Length: 68
Image (cartoon, rainbow, N blue to C red; front, side, top):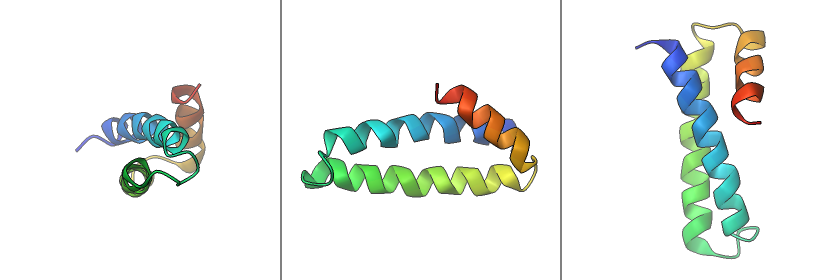
């Protein structure tokens, strides 16, 4: 699969887990806390898949651009 798709998914999931962190109120609401942890794991999965094909500097620049 194209690594550029992985980097876009990584960026979008990063936004999702940051939002669920807010909703979990610092892990005091179990449902949102669980969703947050799952999204973090999935995000790291896409990051590792991306780093196998694209250099770290490029991945970081795109990640910053997507999370603005």
